[in-house]
Image (cartoon, rainbow, N blue to C red; front, side, top):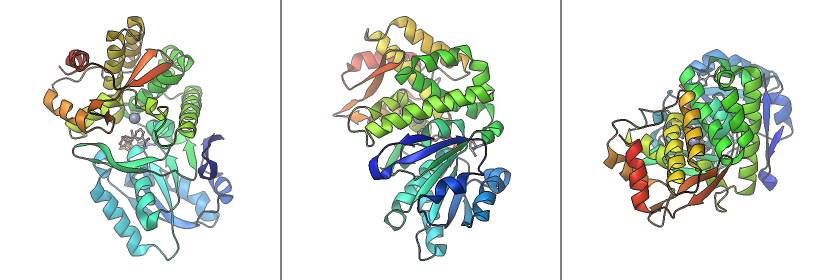
Length: 359
Ligand SMILES: NC(=O)c1ccc[n+]([C@@H]2O[C@H](COP(=O)([O-])OP(=O)(O)OC[C@H]3O[C@@H](n4cnc5c(N)ncnc54)[C@H](O)[C@@H]3O)[C@@H](O)[C@H]2O)c1
Ligand SMILES: [Zn+2]
């Protein structure tokens, strides 16, 4: 069990291959025993019984609520719909919410949990590689606005996180690559051994071989848990490191209406650009920038944003929460395994480098 250490808000992250022991892990947490599983219809059809069976047998009374499978479910309108549903049917006692899906379900459910009745407990049961290595942990919850990603949200920690590696088997290749992008991120920001592992075992990682999944999950979750434990609300310049590749990545997502790229694809382009920017400034050896781009390309992820309106990307960049004191905040590698967070990048250098990525 990996722990996120935040005093009374601490919680565990289980990495497992079945949901059978979930009731036992939740038992000591004094959670409501009735609530809602928020998910997608397809996931509930395929894995609902595996999740709900053990909980119901242990006495939990759970209903299910399905939202559409798309980034557009991360909207204020969807928060309202879900809350309306809970409000109509929730009993007098506060319910437990269970986020069962990828980052979309996790971010949406977390925000609903933060808002409904001024906060009800929730747990994360992530089912995509991306959500297991990243979005399911750390309590950043929120929805998008047309202007930018995650512009409405909260810090609201789950009470428990349960990763069942077995459900990843049905993940389509594009979603596997997308999750791998965040694992590459962890390698660059904090773990050069992990980065080298990905280089050496890329095929196994993309095939989600059990050993490769273990390595990716263990390493990534440990890094994220440690960072969040040190800087829960991104006030100490530590958690911001997790945004490597996200300055441009989020802008690309917003500029294309969240439809063209998955989150992982957008940050893959953003990581290439950030590494290039680091090299251009002389902070990162050029050969390391090339190594990062090579791994991203080998993983089948995009490295350039072709035919996006440059003005829309630059506009979205200004809306980003990482825009501090009138300047975008960049997370730039200084070597593989280390990054710096800075707003001090001359605009002319940014323009020159971005021109290579926005073709
Ligand atoms: N909160 C955070 O800290 C944080 C961190 C990273 C990313 N995010 C957010 O996460 C979101 C992306 O999450 P995502 O990549 O998981 O996308 P997603 O939630 O849209 O899931 C991708 C697709 O995979 C399907 N799916 C889920 N589990 C499956 C399974 N086991 N088998 C087959 N199909 C399955 C889903 O139904 C969906 O169609 C973005 O909105 C991003 O901003 C949040
Ligand atoms: Zn991300």
